[in-house]
Image: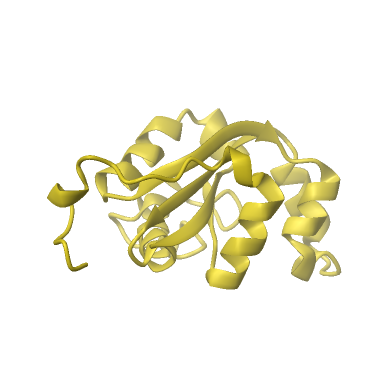
Length: 152
């Protein structure tokens, strides 16, 4: 099992797309094992986007991510990181394929609705930024046998 952080960004919240986006992850068979609504502080934004802080466009990114509430969640499943990123589509909603979350709901590079971890190291680091270990409710769902074979 693999875990990924997802963030429903302020544009997702303001556009009332939370339920539709979360439903897609659940429909895919990913388990949501942690979730909360919160505000990203400038300090948290700098930690989350540490590799971008020195870039000229970072202030715009920070203003966006701190501009309204977000929903942070941890999803778990087979190849969860790749699956989530495939479901999100290209970073720019203008380039994302139809059928992906960004392809269906976004027409912007920055206002792209959802963040998903880009690898196992990033997922572990990001999850730890948003959730304490006691906030994660991992466990096997009773419908698991109906989602994948026993040897998967």
